[in-house]
Image (cartoon, rainbow, N blue to C red; front, side, top):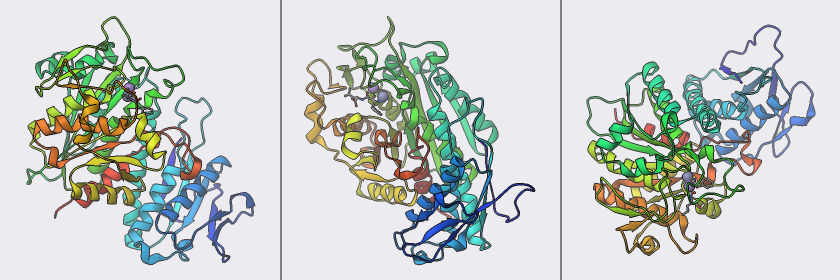
Length: 467
Ligand code: BES
Ligand code: MN
Ligand code: ZN
């Protein structure tokens, strides 16, 4: 589907525009001016900024389902909301981001996909228009992340992710990309990425995609973000059941988020330096696949006993954490669809955030709120160490006795590697398995990937900019 946003009131000739105007009843409702009653939307006055974005998504999604070619949204229609809760700029941003995210459907492989849609956002305030521009970049990058995450594993292979990264570097400013494959991974001793990826070859074989964005070249402070790029997670030899396997092409969502975050930062000319690392693999079954009971020696110097090949995400992330050390990073944040346990704990309401750094936690949670991409803190600490005890190696990759505490023991595994790399005090882990796909329709997004993490990362880095 093609989605076009513009801020001029005049629609293309012959295109019907459906407007939404706010009625006077309480709670206020947005009503379609073409008289079709079905999409009357209830607006909760005083409910805060989230209400604007929610209602815009809902309105645009209704327009898509009615196959309307265009919709018009007027900033003035939100006059009844408590405007002290948000600025004109953030109103523009929310309207653009909400409209793009609401209009999205994954129809790339449908012969008769959705018709293109025009969205007119009306407002003349300069700050509003600047907000629309920013929201458009974010909304588009979130949607591109959703498409890549939704794309199945026969198409979105590790090689394809690498190609997307190279393509981005060629078209966007201040981005360089490097990809480590067989020999490169071997040279760097990235044995965990190699082990997990060993069951797949060629375009499906393992890679480490390294993306460097330099938005503030006169400054040597840089942050690293690491995204889990498991293009398909069969579970490997500890194979998933046929109930649990479908959908596991979305196990690369964290990696895709890193890619599209950096694209958005470049398009917004964000004055920050960010390195993105995406270990991209397929967790497949084959005679070469790694197995339970294998012991892997790592570049970090921590030996790992594999107790479950389905706990593959933490393995590839651990190697990437070690690789991050060379950047002497200010902060390191990883993002991953890491555990079913985080999903059990949080539902689809929040992604989990784990860190021992209170400032970093606060900043990430604040960014999540601003991006409507919310986070909730889960525990991280040595009380989870016993879940990962091994008698054969320094650490086991999974707990042998049940799933309880699974999100936190996974986080502790990663923390061990962050500690070894020397940045545990400036490290956070985001488990976005809860928000890989929408479970309840309340967010007014099309079924499939939600693009979790893009919007929150962009907010986080925009807030870290210095003049
Ligand atoms: N990719 C999965 C986690 C997942 C499950 C994400 C469902 C999204 C939806 C991960 O690699 C995995 O398999 N985790 C295991 C860990 C266990 C073997 C210790 C899990 O959560 O069951
Ligand atoms: Mn797995
Ligand atoms: Zn996985």
